[in-house]
Length: 304
Ligand SMILES: [Zn+2]
Image 1: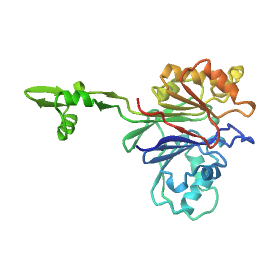
Image 2: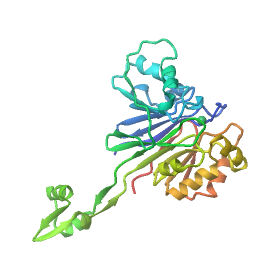
Image 3: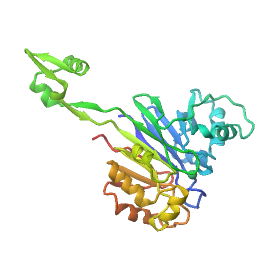
């Protein structure tokens, strides 16, 4: 079974604290190892998690506020230092192409790694992964911001007891799956009769944003939703003004979108006790709740 899990590098918004590094996340998804929003210090945080720069296959940046991108210069140079042999696509808001160019060449280094900028210029832009799709959706923040999701296509799960009831064994099973039906003893057995739908897994990454359609589009049926909850409800007015979410809003999105495991992160340094985010979110979300901690690993929940 391939690994699908979130590795948390940092969980602080705006400024790091003694307990929390600037934002930063890695998603291991089969052969893909995707780095999201590396804030300052992400390179050193990686070292603690066992994820190497060479393992990274792709980088996704939601927007060019410092806590989501100031780790890029060091990490980009590290890719070259380690002579990463594979090309590394980098997705970011197209309007921030100048920021990206400056971060990429922030200081002198010998560039050997092949970085492939693939800016996001449309809401709903899709990029092909092996066996899944990476999709970007526009979010609501003072500067151009996109959230991302990884979507595996829905499939079917074969039901062994039904197959054996029809006497379908061995290569005939594959034949049935390919054709969608099989003639057995003069009768046509359809795929639907011997299988049940198996929803593809979904991972969603929703960073700096006020509540908007893009948030719901990304969160829809996510097995694992990583979502910013910069503020608590006591600061709801401020959150709306500056384009951020509260823990209560994030939790309601998760409930309304059928999310299975909810990861709250990107906490304002004004709150010392992370339990406050948990307490607020639990009032609105009954599923599995994780208050992200630096260097923690959160598996994508097993398939349904
Ligand atoms: Zn921001």
